[in-house]
Image (cartoon, rainbow over the protein chains, first blue to last red):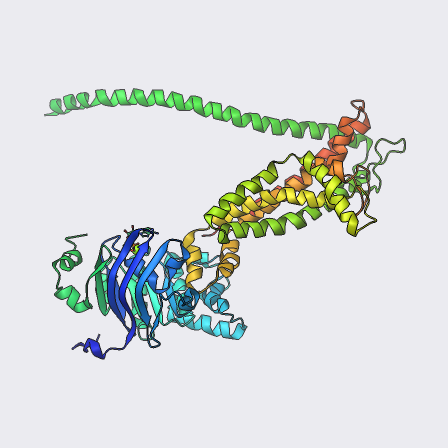
Length: 263
Length: 315
Ligand SMILES: Nc1ncnc2c1ncn2[C@@H]1O[C@H](COP(=O)(O)OP(=O)(O)OP(=O)(O)O)[C@@H](O)[C@H]1O
Ligand SMILES: [Mg+2]
């Protein structure tokens, strides 16, 4: 992180949520969220359980479209083309082609490691062996899994340890060269060592890609993110540079949450 | 000092003891329930053993008259003639051909229906379709038999005028329809048991519904789908009425579904309904035939078990 911090206006935007409301049927889970997502930066989403962090994250790749009764209002603009991701006319599959997601629990497909990582490419119609091999290797290297996996690419992915599985899921998400990576508590199912390796990875990945990460671990948010957003019951309470949020939060509630006196 | 400790211990003992005796009465109750359940399990084990014992012991008598080699290789099945032949291949061919036809119908259609119901249909449509499918498997097989004989065969004869009135094809087709719900409902259960986070992982990569269903859900549910197929096969091999009614009962060594033929099961009902004297070789043939059938089903079940172990649900 550069210090002194650059003026926010000078930073390029990758996405921008504006007036975002989200409803699960009759239940409004997000209330009028406005939040910038800066390009090639890590933004952490924190807040007590049930405040809508996952809901917000899943708006970006339109995961909510998979279930009936869900409704978006407002917009999330993706830059540089300034397209509203939530527009009904925008095909959710097109959106998911540009953003990748890593889930809380590693979710390897019942396939080999190679085929797991190649999955997004195959879905995009890329089937040439040479291309796949190159991209899979690159993705596994970026996810710091290549050395462990290179001799067992054609083994079932389930044989990997939990931490390795999660890194494989990150490789899978990276293989399609997404513009934004969405992480929903990617380390909550992992031990401290696996967690540390994934945090390192995130620090490296932000050179190449914009990252949004939900976490319940305050140290993690402080370690990996440039920006932090604190949410509470569907609302964005406070947003700013992670340093500022953790050292001198403007809202008392944010401070209470961060220091563990609340939530 | 130590005296007080003992007296507190004493006081502490009495409620603990009553708790203990309470535990003992519960223990007895549990023992009773356990033995009732054990007896119930025993009944089914003994039934199975009894069946196996009868099949094997009667077959032993049979094979003391008919060499096993003849049983397996003879090309004729004429157990009731003076010049008796006991070539099980004759009946086995009928069983295999009709089951093959049935599975060609039931496996593809059952799988497609399962994928559709599990991955594409909304809850409301599913609620309509599932009971209808279950109805299909609740129809008595004798009804299916006459449906094959009186409806499907005449229909087929319009396109194939030389098709005989009794044939394996229409019996097999109808049997396939009957088996569809078995295959589809077990395969669908297996697919629906695949956790949502696997599907979400696939969708998040930009996959379509069809890609998710075929590339992720079906492989994840593979062993359950195999179990559905194996059960379908067992039902086809063991089906009796449809074949007895619609395929004719002439033993006929053929691999052509357009011909009439008897199956193992059709032969067994035929003989069992006739009045053959107990203890005659003719009567004992049904046990040898039944044993063959049981061994076949056993092989399929072992195959299914092995497949299930090899491709455990992995998610
Ligand atoms: N499918 C759903 N249908 C209805 N309400 C839902 C659904 N999913 C989540 N909610 C509700 O929306 C709110 C936000 O949930 P969300 O999962 O986004 O919280 P979260 O901040 O990610 O919590 P956690 O930290 O526990 O993961 C909660 O009140 C939750 O009960
Ligand atoms: Mg969450």
